[in-house]
Image 1 (cartoon, rainbow, N blue to C red):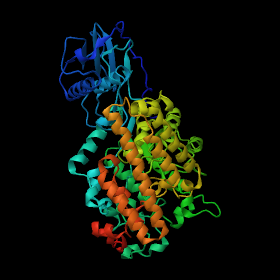
Image 2 (image 1 turned 180 degrees about the vertical axis):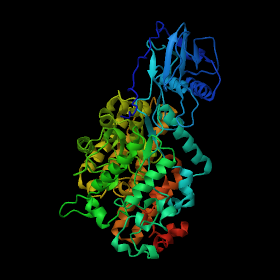
Image 3 (image 1 turned 45 degrees about the horizontal axis):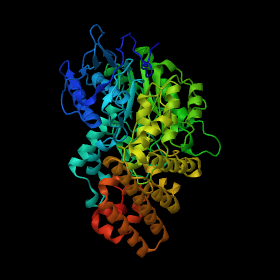
Image 4 (image 1 turned 180 degrees about the horizontal axis):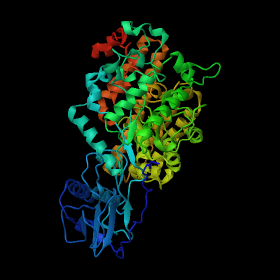
Length: 629
């Protein structure tokens, strides 16, 4: 039977015994950094070490103190393999080295990760946000090398936190309704991309096994529809699609077209293409994305287990699991160790009622729990159906709006429970960590590489960015968390068909957890924080937080004015909000293409604001008919 590799969890003791020298203190400014070999990873490690030692202890160049050797272990230590990183103090030197193998599929940055482990554990550096303001530390004159080896190996075969490319977002339709004054420059956008990539390295996130997954049939409409319309989902309301009849529920995008699962020719084609591609071990069979297009032909409908009174979309799992089993039945005969990979997502994420996973050792399910799902019950039920190997691919971070959700502990708990139950990988889809996402993003990123840390420990790290004002910041974030978890427990999220899938659903309701009184109290609390003893960057972080709350207050006023139907009131509220956002754009830190997007909670009112319509002439696209299919 095939094996799916799972790398052991985080540990602080290496698999081999490397004695560490007795601890003693050294001056930070006198450290000597010694690259022991050439290469991109060692060069990056050197650059990061120099940058952080300068911040922490005023290091300005190699001195005559303790050496930190990069890229090589003490004499006699074995070479690093399997994505390992090591930090050892021996023979009067600190050695940072690791698996630096150059590999396009699974790049390895062992020495760089070793430096990050050193900075974290020995120098106390934390990276709460992906920019220089997010580097948190206490100034040090001296430091003590680690008394024990610091060892790291990625605990999962994949730890990924994606982000939409803001450059592409601004070029696409999502940016069409953004006023020019709120559009970031190209340099700013490129910095966002670079900073986020660097932050993910600092979080020690890596991918050790490359396996294919994702919506697998997005090219089928272009390739096969003209000759094989019967391979695709059928809906009686569409009419005769083969003759070009266009109806409202035909999927707008090719990536949304679904297959007719009961058609044996579809399975033949999928297997045939897999064979022609060389029968790779990981066989991606994940359905296409989107809601329209699920097949309603008689044979597919017979595969469902719909209960009396249920809507068509309430439960589509059994038809898909039947389909996956049929593909597995054929694939294992051609390659016994094949692993079929699919999202367990959308309306087929619900546990099956009739079907079981017939080839559990050959099946890897990418579970996509929604925010309002009881993922523990979901995992229990899928395990009972035969699921043995899974990863999670949440959309929790697909959110880019003004209001913080306060769901960082909810997401942390989901991570912890998934790993405890044996998840082999975690892949988060989402936006870059904007202001409203900073805490949630840090809680997720930190917990992935350090599953030994409690939420309370991670939260204290996040609060520490505010220095002496951390106790006040803690009260603020706890207030937001209490409101967010209360909102999640209510009906708002659960009434959404998907159970709060992503930004298209949560952005429009996230503001409901906040009242004007809440926000006024938040603002007063943050403004009450002591500023004495704060560094310049700590004061800047505190001011940014107050600015973000002020933006939330003005946004809530704007939404209330829009709902009131009073045009003059709306114009006035819109002008106040717009002027504030322009003045403080750099401090507000979120993607306006989402706030002004079609599915946001704001655009429905902005389109009625006279001056906004003049700023964004193409707002008329909102009333344009859909393009022909």
